[in-house]
Image 1 (tube, rainbow, N blue to C red):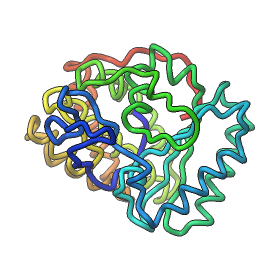
Image 2: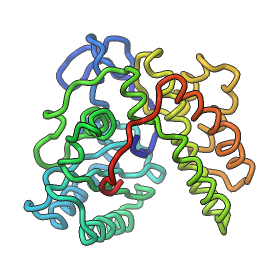
Image 3: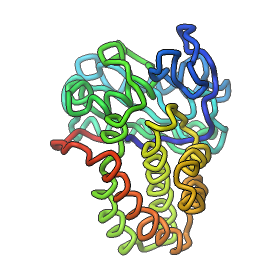
Image 4: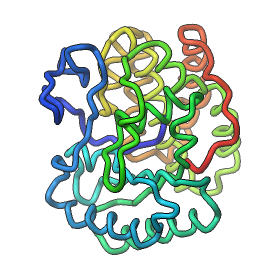
Length: 294
């Protein structure tokens, strides 16, 4: 699952097409995911930023390379907080991203972050269309685009993807790779040379663990939320013995922690248990070939 910011739950009862949500948990009456964001939900404080992002993307990536662009995270969900929230973008390219494409995306990130004080960081993911629509990514990147991304520029790839249910296949293919991530995080923790590096690592790892805990119970709960605190509480209903650890992870996920004990909790206590339980319940995510940027 892609990393996103999480500043609040989505609790509307209709999607943009007027279909009633079946249980108030981000699903329609037929049990399919409702796309969680819309341009109409962008807070007024972020409207100029989004307009500048649209213009900047068009200028940096010509039509021969850019297929479409998307917002995701708290800004299109309408829950972004000025000065605290990130702006998250995904660009679907016609060809695999090049080093020049990555450099252009980095320059765009920096320019937007510098110009707009209301945003606390800008992130741009780059993937080619073939990868986003590929069969191996159908229940990971494909689901992400179709359900968690809001079209900003170009034709919507979501129209070429299926509708999705909160089932075990989705759970496995989004977050069934935690066991592979833990060794890399431990290496980063061991080599972290500053408190800031520990803070950034703990924040990212905590976010991933909370989302993994939530998708572990997703098929049983039958719904969706992008709110980390709520995700932890949903998890706690099914694993009360791990509830305090998951709540602690959700707290760390907000801003990170420089306390070495936070990384111990995440990487040596909660993480290994969660990876083993996830494999036992849902299996292991199918192997991927080397993918594009993300």
